[in-house]
Amino acid sequence: MLARMEKNRRIVLARRPVGAPVASDMRLEEVALPAIGDGQLLLKTLFLSLDPYMRGRMSEDRSYSPPIALGDPIVGRTISRVAESRNRDYAVGDVVMANSGWQTHFVSDGTALRKLDMQHPSLALGVLGSAGFAAYIGLLEIGKPKPGETVAVAAATGGVGATVVQLARLRGAHTIAIAGGADKVAYARDVLRADVALDHRAPDFAAQLKAAAPNGIDVYFENVGGDVLHAVVPLLNDRARIPICGVIAWYNLTEAPAGPDFSPSLVRTILRRRALMEGFVVSDWLHKQEQFFADMTKWIDDGAIVYREHVVDGFENAPAAFIGLLDGKNFGKVVVKVAD
Image (cartoon, rainbow, N blue to C red; front, side):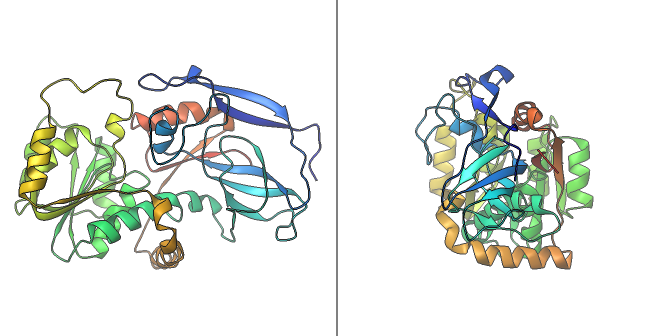
């Protein structure tokens, strides 16, 4: 049982960002711990997931999920421990995956929770969670790489991209990992074992990509948009598949990018190549979740899939870590350690 003097700390949306989020767009608050009723349980957050999609939820633009209301906690998945329970299905001490958002405590009625029994529960936010699931669905259900085909992956060392690279390799594809910076490129080449690893910051990146894909690109896993997409489009093969998981380079745009309009070239190429470009969100694929969890657990146990976490210590550091994530400063799946 928690001491009732303990407070619930939460980070709320103070104002809607214009362009890139800044620290003052978010506000740390302390409120009294909520009481629980019959059938409810009080969760204490252990780990908080940080993901690029949260930027979209901060805006009022129409999307697949409603925007965060001003004054409400930022949304996000958590790994939590049951601190108090009046729900017969959950005991104090159980560890669960929840959608508690950016707060240290959360009252749940037991729905949308998943009990966890694993040595490193934070993995349920990454390679065994929504990041790994996005890689699994986007590549295997939409990209559908065949042995010998060429798969290019943007943001290839992030929480999603790193898993995509390895899944493509397991499918027998020729993998091109695209990352930002020499350390990430080396990781993609030496640890993820991509066939080719390229730095998108290189001034001759487009030429390097063309040389790395002499037979064109069959699957492009899109996490970024921007100049990486511009370099990929001319190399697409007939019947190419482009799963769109994210476009982080454009999340903070307040107006059209400077320079020529790229859309005619993009649409013309999609038409001529009879290519498939499909956006997806993992909530549409929950019927595949159990199969994903079984497959991914086996691949991790077998050493076929490796993972890297970027752990930020301290709940109050979540806003700065999120801002850094959108700027590419993370290396691996970002989680905030809130409590032991």
